[in-house]
Length: 285
Image (cartoon, rainbow, N blue to C red):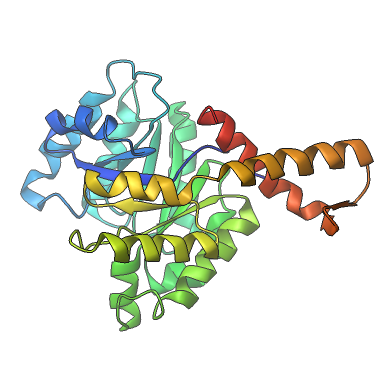
């Protein structure tokens, strides 16, 4: 399976469903993804109001500004999640994408996919792997629905489940497994936000580490983190030029491998080259 729609997913930010007035600010923050929050950031007593507010945002046409819009629903295994889904199925203007938290097995994704299809909704799906059970089933989850565009790694919940520290080194196996599963299905994989706002250098180091591991982007908890994240996950001019060159050489050679600057390059590299070019084109580079 190859990803049909590569796009920049270098950064994302949550905006509370309870505060629709903050939605335009989030869209203008520079983040590639804005996620309206109905789950952990909303108290049980406020869930219904947040849900109504969030769905009202999508009743009017969205500006074509390149920002990916998502609503994070509650877990399909909880009452609030079922209520979220019922409300989304009932509306004629569903959100363009839903983020599914705490996904444990493929069946909950398949169920939501089927319900959306039945309602005639084209809504895309993003899944968060943040439980031990979800980590074990990550490969099956990644491939269970053509609606899935990206997988997110939920490090805070994962560390709690694994009883380990929430550090890069402690979570490297879990992160790598999610990268591996996402790559097998041709999905983007996006890392958990860095929580310490007073440590911008620490955030950049962690972002660079997860980028080198295979992540396409990382979450933010504040707009002031976004510029640095976008910088870390943006292909450099040299990388873009090389990607275009590799693609051109393969097209010219019509073979399984080419030699560029004395280095042997084999065809499997092409998918990543096309992804770099697609993202560069989308960003007008």
